[in-house]
Length: 472
Image (cartoon, rainbow, N blue to C red; front, side):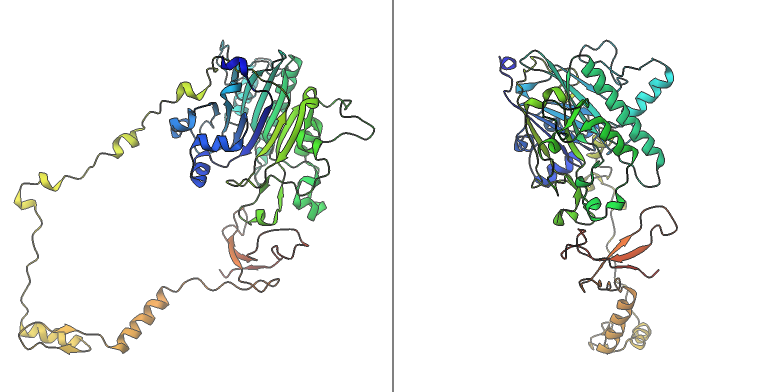
């Protein structure tokens, strides 16, 4: 039986794909081909940006995999996470969210062991639903051949936009819920692996911006939380098997402690990937008890298709495969229903011409109106040049080169394109125009900057400091 075979060494990959449908279009491949190309047993995707009714059966029901989704509630095309598991390591349970607010009571397929301080109050229940409603976490429970259980939590942590301080509160609450859930699972005897987009670079070495300008790297509450939550490298005088009391390990930094310019996310607006001017915000965080089994963790910066790149880790644990996928498996719900728009979209509302039998409704042919000699003389007086065929036909208008040039000039004055951009001071090359998006007195105002990709200040191939406001 397949579930007895399992997988001998678990490979797990995390990738913020910035849209599931868009990445399949950009790569021009099927979902199965896409998953196979990643070469992992468990594939955790973030920012799927899809709702349940937008996903086709070929995406949710892939041969050789079982799929588990969490969608954003109340906002289409936003957030969302998905975990695909090879058939050789089908999970024994799967669950949306972090707090248990989305679990169906009595469902044996839920993982359970939620926050230790849950008191059942209505206020706490509302907070838990608020944390889980954006489709930012999904967990799968697996069994190792040793008999121990391991829970893999796939997360897409919130991003905080400028001018929205309430989102920082939400971000910190999400972090706290994640930490509480992990502690609860550990205290229940389960090993835990957390993967995904944490939306924070917590050390200066993980940010090109910080290496370029150390003063911009502030010690924010979000960075403080990550430092509390996991350890990035062994402390001096401490062996790998005798680390401090922190429960979790940043797998990449544990193995590549001093590796610089190792980034997982780049700005597409500034073309920063060309100069590798990015940040490391995508992590694989492993339970301390699994540290002896951690074989490798690598950033696959050469894999394109998103503004992020995959992170792949190999853990020397053998997973068994469940004989039956849990109820959250998308394969159970893969029959796609047609929407009203899709149903009525193929019905033509125009009446076919063949059905029109009444001659009164048919369009009539245009009948030429004969012109009198006075009419022809009037037309001739308004023309620059008149040519008379001498056989009674109306005169025709012939434009001269002079009038044509004048008309062309008038059109050019009306349809003139945007002014040529000024050249940047650093490279003497044409600049590009940008628009201010953030709130404030300059919102929607245009400005010019160097057209080259963003990069370090000491990189001559990167963007220079040129800036100029565009005329209003």
